[in-house]
Length: 333
Image (cartoon, rainbow, N blue to C red; front, side, top):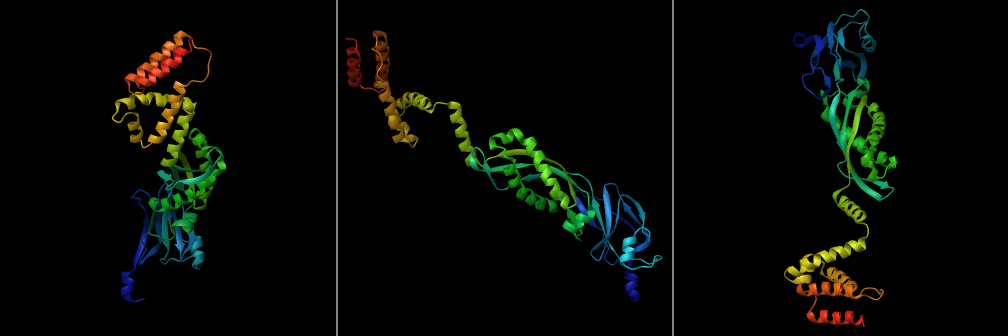
């Protein structure tokens, strides 16, 4: 080693991480062109841990506290370097700090609908989203599986990977739950517990502990939700035939007042033929009721009064009314 190299070399006698930025999970202490002084001090704060890495191999680990770096405190690193137990010279090693703070309010969700088999609707696509929280518990495993020797590894760096893993598992979890979609909203608490149990095992593979996971919403894509809304409306209505007749009866006065009359409303809705057929059937049922017991004078008078009101609305002509009047009066003979 030349004299200039010796002058450039710096010795570190205090190693610490102030954790001055939020969302950092792993931080590699800057050691370029620097060596650790034998007998130096390592400060590990609460909610932190530190590991020494020698040429890619994890050596010693330290929890919170003030640690004096001697042979006794770094036995694995000493053994890896084949140092004599009484060595006193500076040494080279990577030091990586880890934060064990609880990472709150992390969001998960399905960017695209996932397809599951539903007991009531068959194959359906649904979306889901919620929140979760976790913390780093095993720094050595996290280093090997996730962060490596990167200078800084943040929560945001990890979010994408965790989200992809979670979505891959969610499809199977929702399918295996065998809870019909219509009952999922009422069972979000149970689904949250089920998903948390499944995901906790996966988080543990990366040295993480899943603290909480909540399903906030489960929904269908807009086009499927529209179909479901129609189905619900039909169930509420009950008898579709009676509802159709009611709609036709309600639309007749409106159509008579609009330009173009009854045909105008049908054309405006883009369903003139269907409207006309529906109205024709309804009119036929009104003007040709099913055979009943002989009508009395009071019922005939009421019917004639209703038919006469249709003349004023332009639905019946005078000739049509007169013909129907003659027919009804003949039943009194």
